Length: 279
Image 1 (cartoon, rainbow, N blue to C red):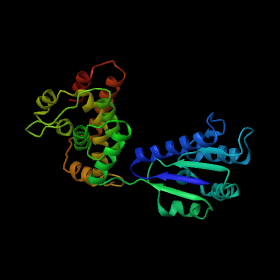
Image 2 (tube, rainbow, N blue to C red):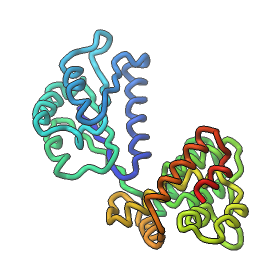
Image 3 (cartoon, rainbow, N blue to C red):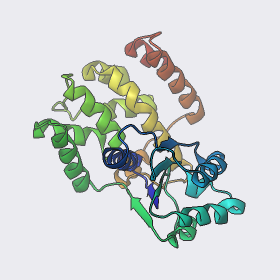
Image 4 (spheres, helix red, strand yellow):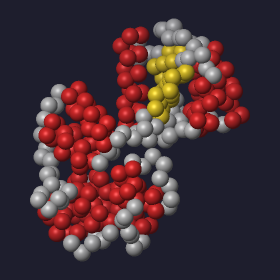
């Protein structure tokens, strides 16, 4: 059995992979002796073929995880991999998480397998994201719908950002609310990225430097990708928003941002001091 999880929403894709492994362990192997994680991409092909040719002394079933197989498998080894996957369709479960979207052409050779399952996780629409966020919060025993709506408005369709911010709120941390001037974390980030004159005033009003440090790299990366003409996997709302941003020197800004992020995460400087590096 070959199970592929892919899509632009890499958090939900990873979540599915973890659910599959948890279900396997609960049903077949709580000790996890027949569960094996292998290298990703082309480096994982030979170890995977070797693992598939052997067996487990403790279980007739096996669960193997090898990520980026579809996108990273060399053509010279693809036929051998597909033959191995088809040979033991019931007792062997191979799960692959793709770190980016895969094309129909890349998936086509695997679609002929007797047991092939492809779970796709595209970016969610605003309404779908709200439903997902509410469901996730409910599954974690969190019932403050108002807080979740505020978080959804704040992260703008980014599931990874939602999980990060939700963990803070669930742990009892305070969430920055918009004020009457429609101030948000993204207003502060845009001000930093475009080096607006009022950026420091906005940061003082927002009073959440840690959140700014956490969110700025993703926002800048999306903006740079869009400016280079690459829009694959970027949510339409984010695409429209970052298309309007203008930078004097994107490469230099990225270098300074990396420096501020490292200073903050290594605890050599506070978030406020790290933002001073960024400007």
